[in-house]
Amino acid sequence: MSQPLPAASPGAGQSAGSGQLTGKVALVTGSSRGIGADTIRYFAQAGADVVINFRNKAPRAEKLAAEVRELGRRALVVGADLTDPASVAEMIEAVRAEFGGLDILVLNASGGMESNMGEDYALRLNRDAQVNVLQTALPLLREGGRIVFVTSHQAHFIRTTPTMPEYEPVALSKRAGEDALRELIPAIEARGVEFVVVSGDMIEGTITATLLERANPGAISQRRESAGRLYNVSEFAAEVALAAIEPIPADHTRLIGDVSGFEAE
Image 1 (tube, rainbow, N blue to C red):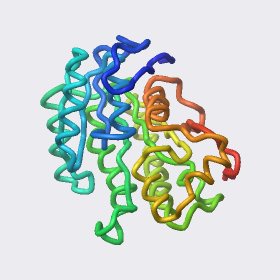
Image 2 (image 1 turned 180 degrees about the vertical axis):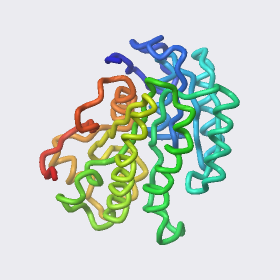
Image 3 (image 1 turned 120 degrees about the vertical axis):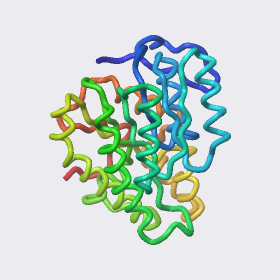
Image 4 (image 1 turned 60 degrees about the vertical axis):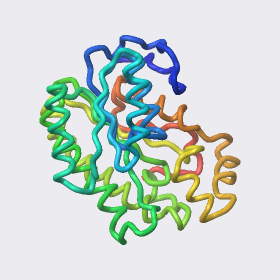
């Protein structure tokens, strides 16, 4: 597996990597909008059939599916609450029934800054749900498949580099999720499947960035100034998509964007 892929603005035509993923099936969690939706676009433009997962944005998911089908790819739209194991099991069974198997699983969905979701929601979504989705989907992943976990520098480096107080509970829960997933690498690799973490800086235009800016005005502009620039949603989604085909780094981690100011363990 090695590069091309990108070119994925909404409604864009065939990408430079068209056909690269022909015959492959990719599931992206939390893919009705944002990074997940653009990752779906990149995969479809490269020839993959796709599974679009949403929690409560069905119209957006269906609109994205229509884009995918215009490219001549198959699209399965599946609503699922990832914190509910029964809902996850139903989603994976729908994938099995439609496609028979999976080649790419992108664990993109995350959260924790939403209000009225319960004190332990961040940990349930960013750790427990990630592990459950992976374990439930793993039997469907074909040999040579790839699992991609999407996180942030603020979470990946949280043990050594403090983050904004408003984001700390989310960062800690996402790091806990990353650690729990890494513990599964031997079992993943025993099935002939690969695992990689994609970590990026704050991403312009995401819900998280919007909520942080609301809670801490100026936070995003300060980070942008410190980093020189921040990736936007489409740019970062391109990196997530590439992580599904590029060689796996020795430490299973692809760091995207500026890492100055973040101290490695």
